[in-house]
Length: 76
Image (cartoon, rainbow, N blue to C red):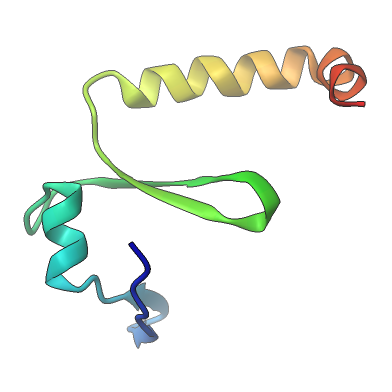
């Protein structure tokens, strides 16, 4: 799915309006939490909140920080 949207100023922040097709595909409703994570090649990923997601991301961040050098070598 490829959908064009625009960045809008909302107070002192910026927001993205999600078309209803995207909201339907994400299976979310108003007020639900969404997570934005970095993906490959400068892309971002928008995901609905999943139980335990925050804890998993904290563990992943900790591992990536502790094993930064090893991961850099593996990436070569």
